[in-house]
Length: 311
Image 1 (cartoon, rainbow, N blue to C red):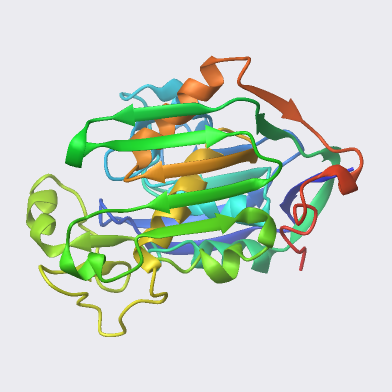
Image 2 (image 1 turned 180 degrees about the vertical axis):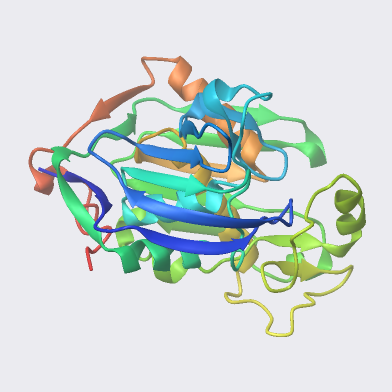
């Protein structure tokens, strides 16, 4: 049986929120089978649990934000996608995330720090079958036209692969690869995707800060790009780091479905909003997907049984 996974022990981190600039403490704790991933706002007078679900997403501007039932007026947790991406990359099914503010700390701007935290706590198998969301027919969201066209698609595939294409029409970004494909079954998430950092353009920073965004952003936790070049003194971690970060985000956004996907995902210039719309469209059509388990691990897609080594 391909089993569910949680942590062996708890682990903690302290950082700042990318948008709020607030100090925040994060505690990752083991959870029982079939719990899923649950964020818990422990800073409130009465702690509030927010289970991760596609319909808990209440805001997708600049990040993926969840609240109980997707209520925009309820307590929320922002910027969950990098931690969710790390959980997907390591095959973590069940986890409690205690948090002391309304935003997950940005740490180094990638998911590598979360991968380290999860692996340092240890990953353990649980006596329950891992449940996958298998896409049975193609689902697509398209918006805009011409230069404004963006789209994202999920198609049937025995495994999980993602392809992303960017087009920022910016000299520094255009000088880097514009498209990346990644197969989750390769077991290379930690090496190939996790270290890709979030990025931003100096021309946008002033406008965003005037709206109370990116108050915690710096070159310590983001790639910063001016009109012509990357400003970080150490340059890029991968030559295709910018498009790889879009894959990292997509992995996190799609894991908000509550299950690892069996699908081929393709996107052109998509983002958090489009990813959530795609999930909602998929899950609104009961003929488009099914929940499956693998009693015989050999019948699972190649690499999935070994996706997250428990060490």
